[in-house]
Amino acid sequence: QSALTQPASVSGSPGQSITISCTGTSSDVGGYNYVSWYQQHPGKAPKLMIYDVTNRPSGVSNRFSGSKSGTTASLTISGLQAEDEADYYCSSYTRISTYVFGTGTKVTVL
Amino acid sequence: QVQLVESGGGVVQPGRSLRLSCAASGFTFSNSAMHWVRQAPGKGLEWVAVVSYHGSNEYADSVKGRFTISRDNSENTLYLQMNSLRADDTAVYYCARQSSFPIKYYFDFWGQGTLVTVSS
View 1: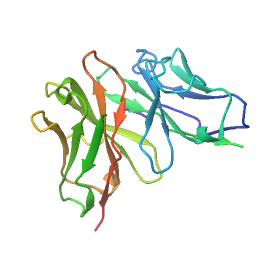
View 2: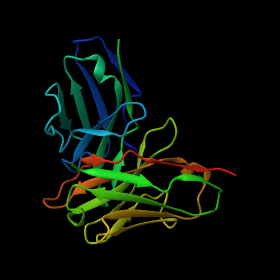
View 3: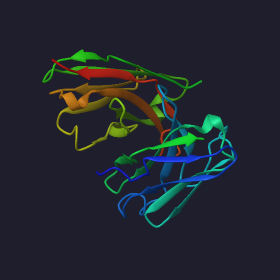
């Protein structure tokens, strides 16, 4: 049950687009279309941003989008805004019916 | 609206036990799988355990044999019994919902968390 691999930090200027990667194995990310992404502001609970690789829950800005290729999933934030500065975590269902999170990425808006 | 409220955290000595609770409201608790997810200070999220709507469960290797997840559908409450606690169990513990009807594979609602500190 090793954590999925994410870059520790990603930064961008307001209005730019950034992409966060999430690399797993064929037993998790690569084996299922059950990757989700969570945003967490300091001292707050995580918030669901993307589910089932590409889907956005109601109320989440369409500036957030997800994709997957092989064992790597990605979250793209377009039109970066100051409020997007937060930690982001990917998560995947696994072949042994458990879940695993990514190592987390701190997004900084320059 | 959906609410998840954790309680039971606190300071506990290594080797001792603690039981966390998560009171649920605003949805049909018995139709949802429920999870515990923890976050050590300054660290990332770690999935801990799940109990299905019908009571089956799975655990992370790091807590297997020491923690027990359970639920009381009549009280709309989720529990986490933590035994043989270690310093590396120190974390904020969140409960989170996973819809079972239809089945989903993500956590759509989270509580605000309860802090467990294991220290002598």
